[in-house]
Image (cartoon, rainbow, N blue to C red; front, side, top):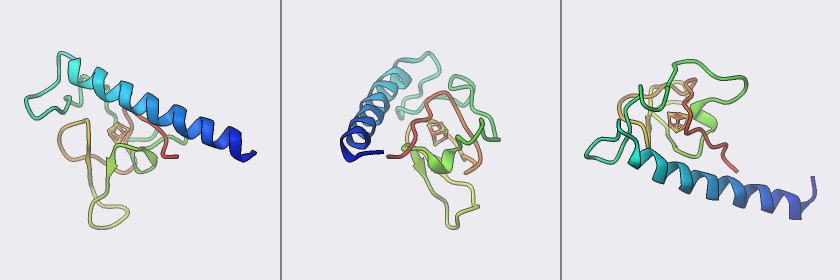
Length: 91
Ligand code: SF4
């Protein structure tokens, strides 16, 4: 893939992430801390295809690569192998 296409895709992912953050905050399941509930975001504790939390822009890792972490937009402990509808692939 050439650099121009790669940059365009990265920018698209970033814009998609910002739009999803705004959408997550507006969801009925959104909490006072600004995070959405797992149910509202259709969180699952297993990957969807090759998409998983550890590859997501919103992922906040735990102490080890396999430890539970957290998410910038979904409340509670999050599995590195999980997935939800707010998934945005890291650039
Ligand atoms: S896939 Fe969903 S729960 Fe997982 S890190 Fe991304 S936004 Fe958070």
